[in-house]
Image 1 (cartoon, one colour):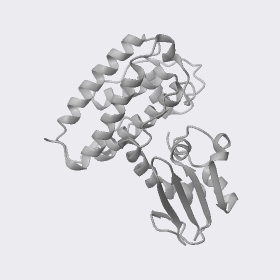
Image 2 (spheres, rainbow, N blue to C red):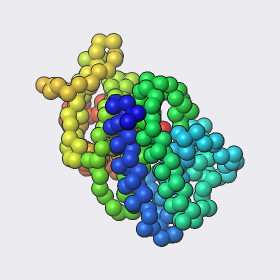
Image 3 (cartoon, rainbow, N blue to C red):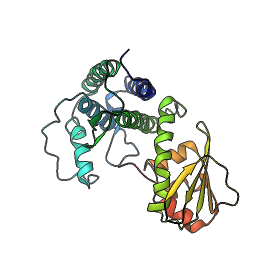
Image 4 (cartoon, rainbow, N blue to C red):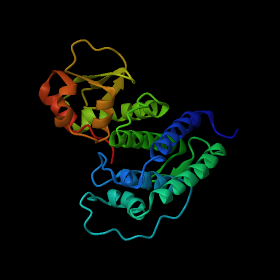
Length: 274
């Protein structure tokens, strides 16, 4: 076995989610591949194209040479344009073509991951065109495929796997950015204390504290008399943090105690995915 132990949990989470995605789309008829998802402009087919494309980039395959149409209203940034190329180049592929490429890509990628011999701190180029450590990129891939698995489940009406290994990788990555959301994006004042009380299949309570210099930190300690407490279920937390919905759509599922103005700023700046 060549995989470093600290990489194995991300690889296992990725494997679990990618196999779940294949299981979800294999029985679909042609028309179901066009079903809309929560992602603006993206269908079920488009999400599968995105997943295939990024895994191909992780394999070192060259990016497609492809000119995007000018009328893609949902493509507004250079990052979005980069992501869209792998999607648009497959928009006219049939269901059998999509399934065949997905299966082949998963086989190749699984083999690559089984034979991974680099150290966790090795610097690699991520699909987002950034130089990051291998450990972080594998966490990012596990996060991405789990979130897209959930996108597909909502679009197809097949809920599940909210507590799978990918869900726990996603929780851990989202925890790391919460201090920035509270202290920098929401501009919480010095000495603010914000508690996130999340229930459901993945349950946790975390406290973000903003110090006198405006820097945020997070831990699992209980705080008495916090400035704000946000109580919500795991799926709602994930959907908000991943930009799958706005607060107005799930307001009845979020309980706010304390400074409602600060709570509003936090929730308005909660989406952390590109």
